[in-house]
Length: 320
Figure (cartoon, helix red, strand yellow):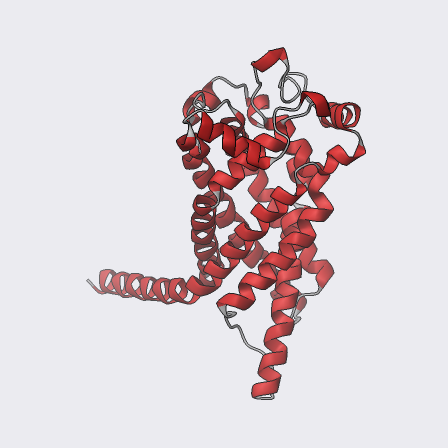
């Protein structure tokens, strides 16, 4: 299909949006992850709510530890979002070209998003595991990326890969809902203003923020039990009180995580921390999509200019 400039533009703007949103919301993400990783009976819980995690960092003078693993998380977010948006845009364009349709339906959109998500997970899983272990380590005791990876086997680096592949349904649902709502909104607006069919156009910032928040809220609620199990599988072991916050890494499986939650916290434990998860993911996704919509046009112009410069350079080299 040649050089896919539109897919590259989507990937670049999506990756930059992920980088900014991850950095802004990282302290909230750290508190949320440590709270989710703790699996204890109610009378033994160290954290009664997410604010207890923040208070621990403040009281122990480890506020900067709320940013432990930020570099790894940013690297993982940038790479994963670049691959995801490139894959999503590429597969979507490929489907439209092969099918001859002018728009993509919901079912096809889910398949395309799942394929892009699966490619992303396989490539970035070791970074995801390392960043989760850094976040769930005791404040001030987090290891660096290289040490975290070098001390783990390949199988440990890919802890939670199966459930991560299952969770590709989360961004699939999110971006499908967002894309469908976006197209309906643009179609309604353009028909009202001009009476013409819609063409590719960026959403206003507020509309993109609202649709991003709504779509992520739906996806998070549907997949939250799997999200919590994934955090537990990837969490760093805790030496405190001789009780681990999560199952031992060399014995951890999805069934171990599910049984641990059921025995210690009951059925409501599967949704422990969902409010913090929704708050973080909704804000993150809304910011990501808002930033992406705003810089897509700029990245498109820059890539067009770059392509033109490269074409002129090649032409001069051939004529020389």
